[in-house]
Length: 459
Image 1 (cartoon, one colour):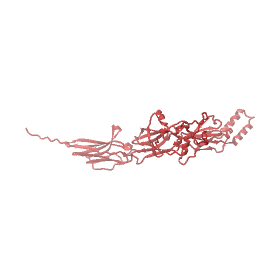
Image 2 (cartoon, helix red, strand yellow):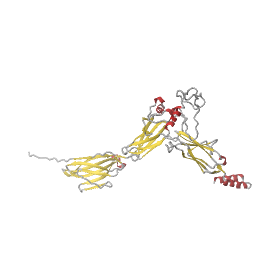
Image 3 (cartoon, helix red, strand yellow):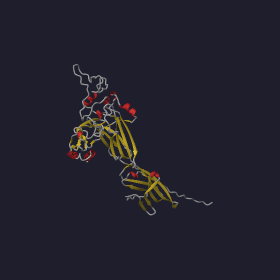
Image 4 (spheres, helix red, strand yellow):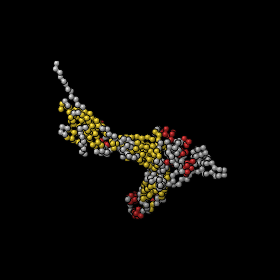
């Protein structure tokens, strides 16, 4: 039998894409596709995989038959060695560039020029976005000041625009706060109020002698809270030497525009437990919004003028992003009256223009609650109180001349109030019109005269 020699001709093709670390939005990225073959190159095609893999967008094509290359990407002007490596340059990547990319390489089969051998590689481009904004708010505000009951207070730090989700943490007066995982309300209430002997300082905060003395002044002999009423026998606040007079057990006089210091025993906890919780949600552009919540039992004496900082760490940031708030009770509201010379029939606006703040604080936080009352009677519309920064008195009558109005401003850290007296002058125009109408009383029915007076007043 004759000997027949069969030579099977094979070719090989390997395709790999160089890995890339996560990139920051705005950077210029170069994708590199490396391939090795002993065959003749037919074409190279780059795809962007979209919609979860259901569709592909062609972004670059090289056709060896016509020795041409064509880019489907804007601003692509770079061509490199296409024999062993193909590169695609993505200038100033955005969030929509995030996702998988594929490099497809085709070579001619050595056995037949009509057959093409294909191979591909893929990579996922991870585009990071730094947070765009950060803010700190107080939850459930505005709220009233509670003198005899401890209140839970929550700060909410909102961070938007980051990808991946950033790391959020809180500081108090520049020191990192040790936090506990958020738990149910019952557990928080049971663990939030600690006795003085069980307190382990979570933060170092110096106390001035005035605050310490005022806090201790409301304790009895055996650290029992003293009621601020006169229905029970009074006991001394401190033991003195024989012959010395004991201090008066009466409560401290609270003048206007001064924060009340009548606090019960619960304010003695100088190191409360801080509970931390956070949630995150994806926005329409693929970035994340994180809400971090810090909750503790508020101590109006110690927390007033405390600086709380929310800081954010993110791999796309060279340094932490932060937002700061200083807890502060309202002090000395400044009132304005417009018009300054109110006349009968005018609409008067009494407004809180601002506060007399200390050197460390430039605004009241959290936002206070404004309550208006009239001393000795109801307001002009018959209500007992009104809320808001502005009290509007429409068409004031002469009877309100000399009336006193109280503005109470409060937030969970304290309460204060101030007064203003309304002076109402006669309105010459209304007086003249009234006299003119009275002269015609004999010529017109009574109901027409009354209607005329009311029409003039409404002008």
